[in-house]
Image 1: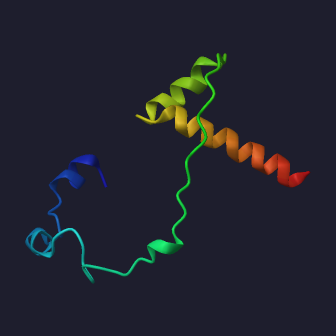
Image 2 (image 1 turned 90 degrees about the horizontal axis):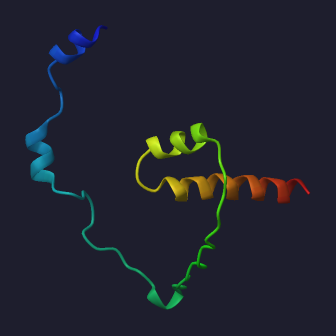
Length: 86
């Protein structure tokens, strides 16, 4: 399909049904055992100076807000894979 054909397509979404349904379908409340909840306080991040290739930084920045958190997640996944490999 061309972009023009896609733009001319009629939506098959039942918007009226979705508006009436609200934000959540199902039970309004569900039980939570708060006595078993453990509050986890994240460790503070360490501020460092790091030199990265411009294209790497641009790649993560293009993904929007939170790009530094995503970069940290990628580095963490690599670290954990290396630790697991021994």
